[in-house]
Length: 195
Ligand code: 5GP
Image (spheres, rainbow, N blue to C red):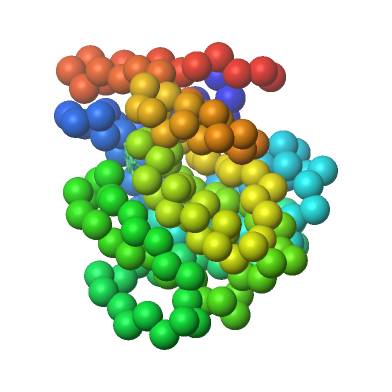
C-alpha cells in the first residue's frame, strides 16, 4: 500500500451509498504534510509535462491543488460553482452534476485566467462518475488550452468515471484507486499499482 492508501485504511470511513468519508485528513480537516506528499508524487508522475496552470473545482479541490502547485511553481485556477449566472461572454461555462449533493451546478472560469497557450494539469480530490472532470475538460477544450494530465487523490474504480476518462485518451493518475468498499465491515480494497 502507498502512503495515501494506508491513510485511507486508517482514517477513512465507508458510508452507505458508495461514499467514502475522508474528512479528517483530506476534505474537511486537511493533513498538510500528507497533501504535500501527494503534491510531490504528482510532480513525479507529471514532471515531464510543460504544465503552466493547475485547474480544479471549488471547494474541496482547492486546498489540494494549492499544495500540488507548490511543486510545479504555477498558479492555481479553481472553477466556481454557481446556480445561475448571467452569461456575458467573459466566462467559460459547463454544467456539472454533483455526486455528493445530487444537484446540478454550472461551473465557470473567467477567460482572463485560462488562455489557448496554457498547458493544464487538472487536480481533484475524488473521481466517481466523472461529471466534475467532464465539466473541467469541456472548459479547457473551449479555452483552446491543452490538457497535460489529470491527477486525482482517490478514484472509486467501481464507478465509471476513470474508465471513461482513460478511454478518451487522457493521462489520468489516481494516487489511490478503490476497487471495492463495504459499509458493513468497513473493508476497502485497492487496485494494485506500480511501486
Ligand atoms: P464525480 O463527478 O466524478 O461523480 O464526483 C466527483 C466529486 O464528487 C468530487 O469532486 C467529490 O467532491 C465528490 N465525491 C464523489 N464521490 C465521493 C466520495 O465517495 N466521498 C466524498 N467525500 N466525495 C465524493
